[in-house]
Image: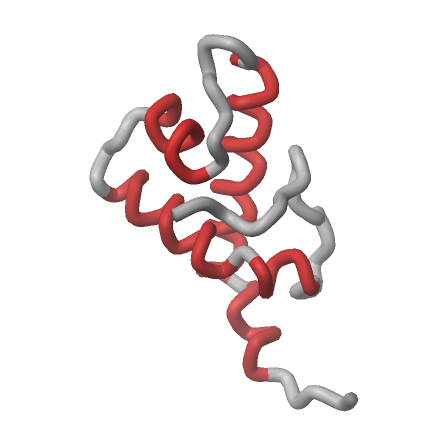
Length: 87
């Protein structure tokens, strides 16, 4: 199972974005992996299909940025899922 297309860095907004909504499962997988103390190299290779040996800087950037966004979702971002939507 791989993530939907992803940016090297997730949005840095204080609002939930369409990108975040597409990556909710990705964020949960990252949080689970951290809880299980999986190595970041293994996680980034499985979730994002990036080889950390070939692209170490990019792999770390992708991992750190998305994990930080996943943590933001648990602290405050989830509240935006409860906001009424207008279409």
